[in-house]
Image (cartoon, rainbow, N blue to C red; front, side, top):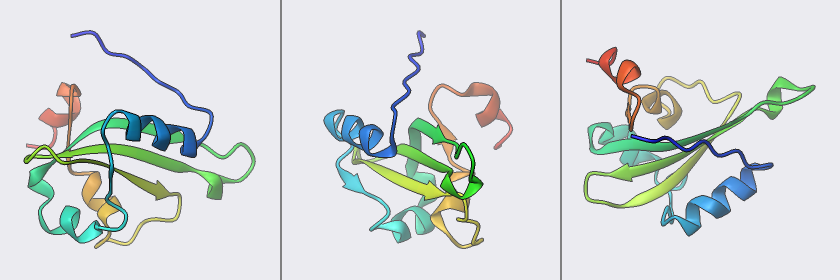
Length: 106
């Protein structure tokens, strides 16, 4: 399967492109869905941004799809490390087309 890599200059541009691809739900506003039903979600897109001079400027944008076909985005910052946060749960989710990573999750 051919993989396409995308890089957007800003988090806002990545979110705009994801919206155009049908990722319309803001899972940051529905974080409990991911925390309570993580097995129902797959990460399909990941965009990582690193702060050039300030590690606090780091961010990751996820394109997520539910088992019902609902698609949305989730944005995390560098300081998101609460063990009950959706950010920590995202680390355990299946990532589409990442076979080696997913094999280690079993």
